[in-house]
Amino acid sequence: MKVLVGSVLALGYSFLAAAPLSQLDAVMPCNTENIKAYRILFVGDSITLHGFDETTRKNLGWSHISGMAASSRQSDYVSILSREISDAREQSTVVCYHTAGGSGTVDQRLRALGSVINMRPNLVVIQLGEHEDIRSGIGILEKNYRRLISALRRLDSRPSIIAVGPWSLSSQDGLGHYNGWSGDIDKVMASVSSEEHVPYSSVADIAALPLAHGAGSSDGVRWHPNDYGHSLYAKRLFFLYQQAASSVRD
Image (cartoon, rainbow, N blue to C red):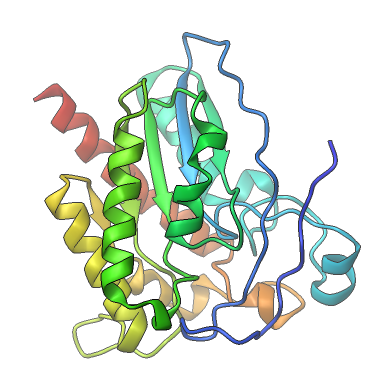
């Protein structure tokens, strides 16, 4: 399968604490025929999935498909989380991706939601926030994030939804919250998720760990969570999955 992907612009201009800009893979096929499988849809950006081409090979030293900065597909948070859910449920899982619609803003994923409308997920994982533009304002993000959650909830399969906040290497306050625009994004996503009864977690504590990032041969890749960072994402999201599953049982 040919992967359609642009390059990460290492240390490119961004309003989220130097988050690299990226253009992601085209929507990958998702097996919806196995009716016995538990289907998980990941709505994300380069942390969730990034492909490669000659430009990424040359400029970034990036030459495989996975969540960016993970050493392999098997070691990224998507694969780890899906394995943990499969083990917990004693049921096979199918991984689906929504990485269509530009570099990865909430609005772009919302506008391109039609590309995954037939995937019929049982669970949706939202991993966004890195590419929001401060010039658009926090009110627009709040509106779009709420609309995205509502649209996902209206899918025919009526999936459970869990979400994590933005990854940022920006400074943090004494309570472990991001400062500045990164903090504003995290707060509004947490607030909307709470109002919409979506289990949510910040990842600021993970981003603060030097051991959780820094892998790769270019600054653009090293900015992302490494294998250890991805494993912590998976652990955090599995806890949120358990919260969502408990809520459904209740």
